[in-house]
Image (cartoon, rainbow, N blue to C red; front, side):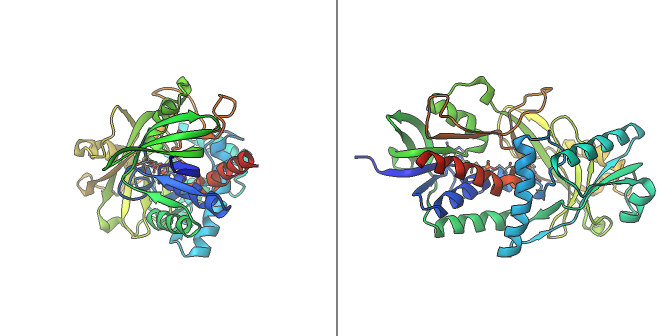
Length: 372
Ligand SMILES: Cc1cc2nc3c(=O)[nH]c(=O)nc-3n(C[C@H](O)[C@H](O)[C@H](O)COP(=O)(O)OP(=O)(O)OC[C@H]3O[C@@H](n4cnc5c(N)ncnc54)[C@H](O)[C@@H]3O)c2cc1C
């Protein structure tokens, strides 16, 4: 007889952890399978740690709705449980004259999404907020901030465990097979291959989530992930106190643009870049330094090329390939596809960290509807 569990979650990034906490606190048995030796070693630990306001995404998209709900939940969670954060505020800047209309569009988009505290800034107003920034105009988002993502991950992990979720590390899910109303989840660990039975499977496998859906037999072309790498460069500590807020350029095609971010530890990072890659490789190419410098010097005129140093990289699990338009998060109970009890989360790129508590609630409701 194979061991049986109510809910198997694949992946212990921020989405798997938040979902495990949510489902376990409702009283269901939860197993989380993670291929790495511990939680949060992939995208959830390789990002800007920005709490996004919810400006950029189309109205009513999951990205917009879950970002805004997640932001509110995240600030409350941080306050209640002493998770370090700072509501720094953020300014998106127009460096060129033709970018000013972009700020106005973002302002309108944010308002449509329900971000009602945005303020358009003239050059003079911008200079009052950030005297060292050079730009023609700005869009201030007071509700944006930064957090310590590792403390958040650790908190979600320990709360999920306290509520009864069991974590199985160093264990990779290598197959999913429908068995009547349940699923046989094949796992590979250092002892070889074995299996588990689960009533519900929640696919939170980040960069591998399209492959997990395929394992289960869902071969939708629309689920294919494209990897989009983002590198960071650090700036010399002498710049630390020159700018207080997060400073972003107007967004690019694949990312939010190379921004200025001072972390809770005071260190300043520039990044992330955005370019498509075939394989997962977290090295930072020093040859990209000039590109970072060129991208940022327009609004950070005080930086010097020699003060940039390679820092880290993350990879976005994107549903849109190069040159393609907006794609929303896929968060779907695959009942209609013929897989009741299988919940796929695919393409959970930015603002996934911000949205995590809201995504967990959203998935939690799907799971409880299924059991009732
Ligand atoms: C460069 C960059 C900057 C970003 N900046 C921000 C930001 O500032 N703010 C924001 O809100 N969001 C940001 N994001 C997005 C955010 O980081 C992600 O949306 C979020 O971390 C996704 O979490 P996850 O749990 O889905 O994925 P992950 O953290 O990748 O977790 C997935 C887990 O699944 C495991 N797994 C995979 N396959 C298997 C398998 N077969 N068996 C068992 N385990 C498996 C992996 O090992 C991994 O631990 C950024 C992302 C990037 C790349």
